[in-house]
Length: 496
Image (tube, rainbow, N blue to C red; front, side):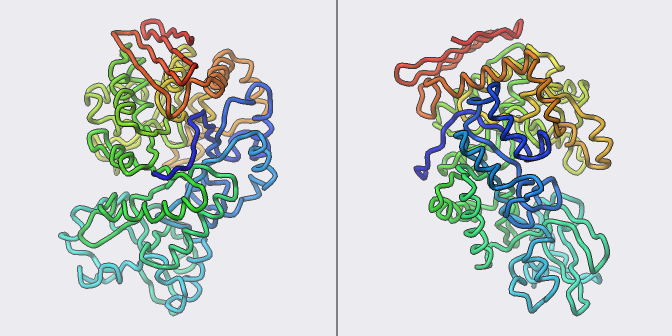
């Protein structure tokens, strides 16, 4: 593992326009006495870059989008002693990216014709050409592949000579005007030297913003070979990550690969064993499970595993996506997982299935506060448990301000807009009102305590106890000790 120092203090998570409308508004908020000192890191979601889809994850380029973010806003946050976590979307780029626009303009004459994945070149000799002009791969070559949408992941791209050429397109696509205008995220060809030049330039630019942690979005889709899986293809995925890490090390960046998989698949352990920080996607569901069942023994077992294996994790409650529950398979019985889903849906949440397949639930979309029944005691206990779990706590802005499910935003977004339930943009006056609420004040007190107390560190000694409804965490680091005593029977806790 690279020796890049990453602290384990709390990290704010928001879009640049989540509060007030610009990053300047968030920087001003972080200077207020109520929040100063609560966070040492800030995960700013990728709409701070130029992007056109998926609220930032379809990146045009990695320059700052000055509609939301100006260089002086970044500097103001750095002056508060707050470093950044930013996204690098390795697998794809927007059709509006300079590289893809060059391909559209010049076709086969473009220097970037192999920057993206020409579907027919990739599958040449391994399938049958269709009347539509793309190769349908033989079943033997694609039987182990996972496609995130119905049909083959293709966008037919109109070249200047009038021919339609299929390019690999795993995620979003929309044809506005056939042969002329597209929206979408086109997969990059990691075998192209130009892609590796792009990776180098991008990581250098991201580092210049004051970034310590880079979240690798959709990295596991990038390595592709006929007949192999197109998700976490081994060993190609690990070879890719190692090559990217060598670049990241040059710029003082720590990599955080993002992957969702069930506990039973042990993908989290594979990432940790390779020396990377890993997401704790189990914690959001485990805490709700502990609170609703008034028992912390499964949560303790997970904490003990993190400690025993020396894993460096980033954990969370809510986030920009949803509450991951597919991930709990193998650590929580299926019946209890279904009960969690039913409970959160009954409290106004939405289930997101994979292709609508029954029992292939991926996440439940809800604010964490609403998932807990909008109960202040449960929200505060959940925050305390998160802050005493091993790892670096990542804190969704809506959770801090006890945000409720936003069904109006879902209705405005239309089909596929379920994620907007937990992405409400807050006004500055709305935040000032929320700061008067006890559930908000006490969360901020806990966050400041977690930031300031010397007992917390990646090198701390941690002990976890659980019996029935009671749970206890003890952190020790040198002369400093911090204890959390929690009781699920009445949702009470104390910090010593």
